[in-house]
Image (cartoon, rainbow, N blue to C red; front, side, top):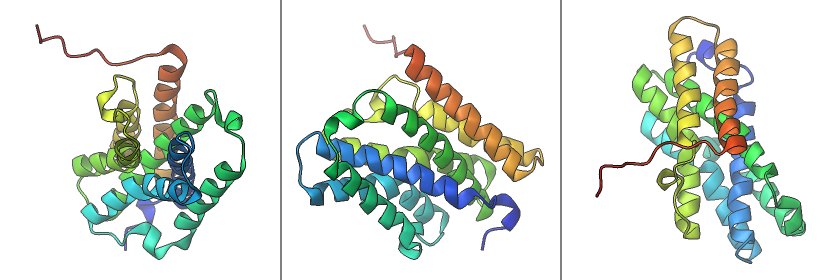
Length: 208
């Protein structure tokens, strides 16, 4: 079992918050293509648990949604809510802002869980990014959209900031709860700035 001091008491709620937002983005990707309820549930599930599943398999932890029925239940519930509500409710930037919260929360939780299972700092940082981004990559591939990895927007970078800060602050012996709050806030702030002011990374210019 992971050391308790590396997993804050509220960490499972970070996990569920991130999962719910990602599940919503997956269900919406299917809804916008006028798919069936079954497809919405499938997209919600694979998007919501994709990153965490990959993380758990890599660090040798029990796959979280297999041992905790709340995870799949949240995905099913989110898909159902989107199925019974009109599309106009989900237009605009609202989901982007919720996604920013989920991205930061999931990155911090992924890094914390990896550290808790004895993963060294650098791979633990990578696990935070994997937790936050792999579900979205799976969603984009299934939906036939350009992957988040292929877009210049500050998305993966925000997850990397949150994960790196949490690992770094933990190594500096900052209490895990404080480290989590600082790291998640920083990751959210960077993603929020990217949404608000369209900030993106420079593209490679070496090609003629």
